[in-house]
Length: 160
Image 1 (tube, rainbow, N blue to C red):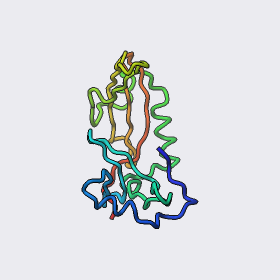
Image 2: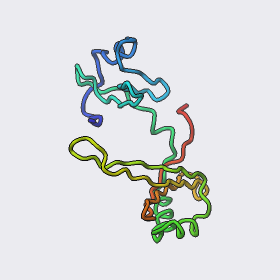
Image 3: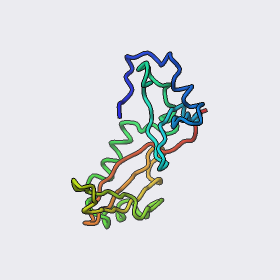
Image 4: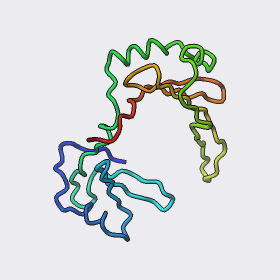
């Protein structure tokens, strides 16, 4: 998937716009996010960053405006809070009960050359909203009980 290139002009041929209005074309426009997406038969989708005909940029997404920005100071504070956590017991001892638990929260498969999955891995995901005004702490606990932690901007709603 290509990422948007800011040095290219916006699409001028309007193919994406016409394709999104064609009921036989798998291109859809999401007006809430200001995004064009390629939809597949299984329901998944891929964001379109450039017009396939003129190479112009698709309109800018509003997605980032839906999440709070985590300041550098807040990221450092949260890192200090969580840096020594290595297992689920330490996670719960340090952060308490999670806001949400997803079981399994992460599913991945190691695929062999012939296309058959040789191993499916699952992990539990825990999120904590109570430790920051702007960030959600996301923890993934693997089957071997190893914990990985990330910080994500809290959802603040659709752009105004």
